[in-house]
Length: 434
Image (cartoon, rainbow, N blue to C red; front, side, top):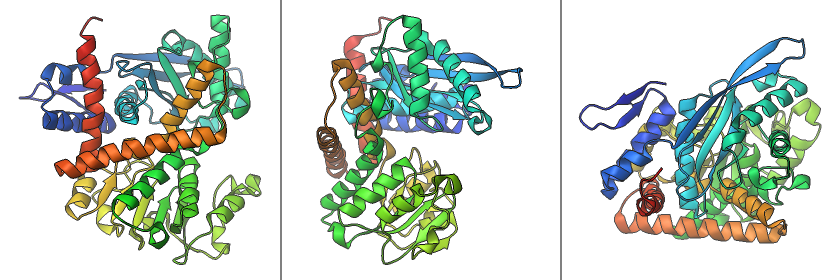
């Protein structure tokens, strides 16, 4: 990564698009707030960033060394929190940008965390289970010195899940010589995980959508929506919206978009996706047989609907695709699904957008709930978990919506201002020592 200094301002830039966008958004909000320049300087850098080598003995006896990363952007409000991802495009700069975004997400969420992120540069689909385990455990051992229940609490992210969390937790606990379930979250329910965590991100996105309808005086039973992505986030977003009366006219995954203007039965889509997993691989492939029309995946953006929920990849709403959008409301279930250029175009054309670090914060809030239960050695009921999650999301939405309305700014600007202020105030109170 090349760290650049912008001429005339002395501010950071990056040749990594994700980190550069995170920096630009932060600086823009900080200038709007008239934030003290010393706080701007402090918060534009990660507190700690480590690169680790991850040597793995492959099944054929050879050794392959993977690159791993862990970044702690801020621990001002509490331990850093953020996922671990396995992908070929993982870099230290990407992890730093994502860690910064996690700082704002945790702050806005009202939870006692800062932002962190980590990952391994690899194609995990080409690894056997044993190779994946050896890689995961070695990575866990290498980041163990900075991980802990009161320092840095990892979680699953792209191409990782409960199994990887168990391997990392087991490795670090053996190194410590005692059991510490709160050192990470996203664990299986049967092994110190939390009931409700699987649906938490989708429940949060759906709640933000429903709160936006309420704020705009819209009746959910008269609203149509499209949901891009039918993984863990999109599937539960669609299901919870439908339970509230919203008509879901299209869903999509990597196999295509499935469209029915009269509405799709989301429960049937769940059942279909989870039937015969060996053949379908947890995908919607062939779902057009269930009274749907199959069209190319990216065409979901141009379908007639009131709301669009991008719950898959980043950058799907860009300068080329944004003009095709017909929905007047966007709720970002995915991370960074809208480029700055696209958001400017959409805002100019009257589209209201709920930003990702508000809309998909249900995941990290749910992780906080798991961590809190682990510290207590106690388990909540699913009803307790969901009630607390929805109440917190509603409060956060109202805070962002009210500030945006009162100050005539976008919801993203409002979210940034609220998030940055909480962190900056604490950094200022704590001072510069260490």
